[in-house]
Length: 179
Image 1 (spheres, rainbow, N blue to C red):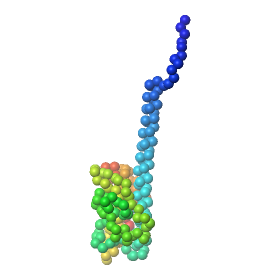
Image 2 (image 1 turned 180 degrees about the vertical axis):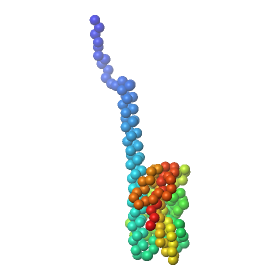
Image 3 (image 1 turned 90 degrees about the vertical axis):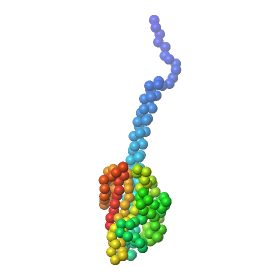
């Protein structure tokens, strides 16, 4: 008669360990994807709120000065990076620069001059930043402006009242508010 003896070693088999590792890997990839999506949305909301803060500041400026902000030498469609602390004092792929004169002009209408400092790299170019452009000048005053910025993603989710002027490319979307 055969007697079965229980193996006295304790532990997991290799298969059991591999199954547990696979399940943990799958769960961590799902969580990581969710965190990245949430981060992208949070950055988009931050930029929209920053743009709205500037819109409020420009409305106050316009009430006091009968014009939207404009500094000497600023032509139609020329603009500046909003805020301070932009790397190398540039934004939008170095297309625009910060202007201390412009920032000083609006600083009493907005607290802290918020800016966008998170890198957005597209084909080797950094397109971070929020830009102010004077769109129309009449009798040497700015009568219309636009605020522009980029967000990550290909779906038009810039926010309510914000236009999307072009088809998204390279995973980034340009958002524009005009007044």
